[in-house]
Image (cartoon, rainbow, N blue to C red; front, side):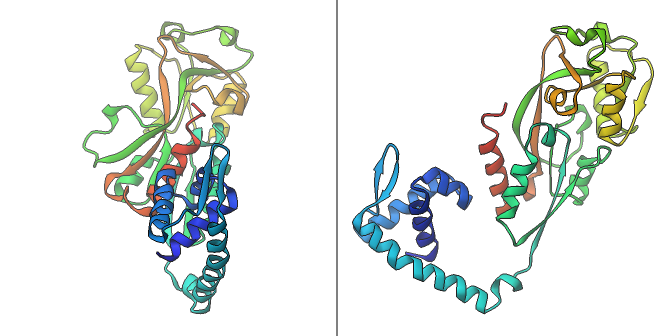
Length: 297
């Protein structure tokens, strides 16, 4: 038996639900269930009665929690009394976040996750023109939440640990007043000669657009570039040009989004250098994002 197991039992007893408790503890549901089962086996009796509508303390379980709560409170007081919480060296996590984080409503969930980790300092990097791949390579950022660029732009890169969070239709973003905005689909041939709007020259957005145009044999007219998403959106909304992006931008930024035909999916991805992917805070954060994004695709 250890102090963590006491904390686990108290958390399950508080919520009557292993899934909810696991989420609060940043554990997988199976890991928490295993810890509870091991403790019960060691004790020789069940702490909870399992039912379809929840976990509820047995009489022995209530007695256990009555004894465990003062022990946990005492442990936390002990940590504070020796300055343990203040003396620990805080870790620093630097996260590059693309606009898809906001258009998919993830930012507040992300901030809430870090609210519960006071020993972790976090820097969010959100500039539209920031080259997060270069940041991952030189160590100036620890992970990125954005779209992975085409494989042709990632030659000679160190191994990355990536997982897809949310998939969306690849769309042409345009003004709601554009005559094409009511189309069910739009083909690449219908974009010939269009004014394109993208990131700064040489940025990931700019290079990705060039690859997309090359893939679909699109010859754009003039190109507007900006390192600010709001400038890009204002240009689109005012009818100055079009951009290629995810469907979620339509409702979030107030523009029209017409899916490309042939259709394709664009993913908001969790991207981290492979040699850093096993650090506890990154493992917890990745699991948390995967859990909350299950039903958002």
